[in-house]
Image: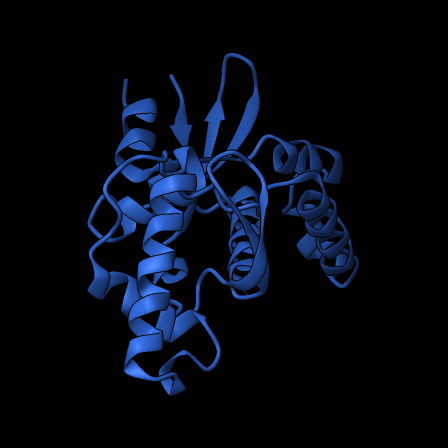
Length: 199
């Protein structure tokens, strides 16, 4: 049976990983549509900080195989459950009804530089065009967990690891095991993670 680890060196690794993910979510990044094509504009996914504040990393040990799985979890309450599912797992498929105009308007005011300074008609036109784009192209998963980010995490972990005392290092897992866990990171909602670990 899988076990969620608490109070171990692996939990310190999980805390490190969570901070790296939060940092990445705060950076401007080119998004993708549902088909995987990059959009022309870049923006910060986590512009308010509320989404990343509600993320956690669970460290799960599978004793039979003696393997560790790091799992980034998001809550099952709206809006985080919707955001997590869309941006991390499945995306939003095309041909669904577009989000309500007021939702897109609020999004545009946060994400698009100069949007609030446009005339009312220009704002309405932009909201309409964004709505039609979402309906036609869907919304892609957030391109954060790619090989480049994994390599970045590993480099940052190596620097962090090198700054620790010998006593601190003895309480952490081997760096090769940590890098292996980074490469197998998965994202799930919290209830799914709990169901995995309480079977």
